[in-house]
Length: 298
Length: 280
Image (cartoon, rainbow over all chains, first blue to last red):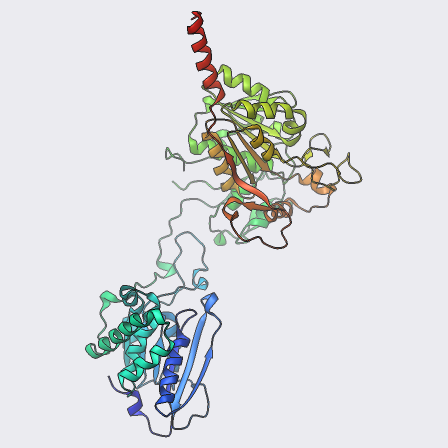
């Protein structure tokens, strides 16, 4: 792989952006990198957003190193290396990568955020990023996509996926491999050092034996199905309200999760937004007057 | 969809010509009736084998709306009638629908003896904390400090825990659930129906028009949400206590034992004695 460091003019710093989801080890990767760079005699500045681990939120860390570094954050389109520990997070930060020479190293594992599951209709598709690995490879000059989480799981600990990506990243910078290993030893938990070393070597080997754009679809990701293409398995018809039986108690209106029921001018329940209804049957079950019915479709 | 692959349609079990029913708007009894019929449908019990016995009160009227064999009997005595019915016709699935006043005050004695005998009867007690039909008098389950027509200064009597009573008296299965958790209520009722022995299920219902109005408890939606906040489902039993939850009313299946079912063992005993004495 071409070395990012070698490409740099001496006066401007090397920019490495590490992104992922809380709990994956973004900060650990950036600490290893920053410590290593410091030991190699560079000035290092690091900036991060953390604390999202418990919520599975977006976590990123900027690492800049060089002869002199002024700002701790990487400007848009200036990152030499973008390491993504999660696929959609990588896509989110892709605009920070240098357009021609940036190197994108991504784990293809998907951690689907709750926000992508907003449509509660039965059989509804996911709102997760739809770009396939091939789409991204076509747009980014140097893209390495690997299912690091799966490989680390096979090694014995899914958490070592970040070290595997660190191994891949280590090939882009001109530092001796042993110095990398020493830096990892400083931050990896004592009982996980062996697995981390194996993961690091696997990452390095993978890059040395693969070319960018040499992506094996077999170890890739299953892409989410777009919402509009899902055939909805609808078992029921829309709720039908028997006006003669409704006693205007308002329970269905209060408990409808999609707020698609309301009371009309006679205070009788009506389905005012049938397109919002997810056929969850809560109104049918909670109607004390048996006035709401969802018929089976067949 | 039940075990036989039949789709559940509540109208198969209702006497539609009696609808709309007489219950007040927002009364939880209707939800409890749905859950009971849902459980029966899941077990796929033949309607001719069903016998509903109900007493007096709002709960007692529910039996009338079910399209099966129904008995509407005197106040407090549905368990006594059901005992006779089950002993005479062991082939029937006897279900008692009763209220808190009907079951614990007027029929309190029948309840403890039904639990003691452990006949294969399912008793669904609808607890709305008040005598709703007769004008809102205090009942054995009215919470303390609640206003009713007979307690204008607030109820000062201690409250009956019906489930603890039934368990102590030896009921085969004891359960409790709120109406808001309709599928959970259905599951508890289904277990009760399937249990060989006396199953006592307390349904925490809400009386919006009489009890709720007198005590300013808000609409029925607010009342059921208050109930939801006051219960502790069985799957949370080992969970850490939450602050700001003064009531920890347990729900789910609370007790189960496998004491012998009375009608069956009684029959065997009689036949053995007859043979012994040469009467048969």
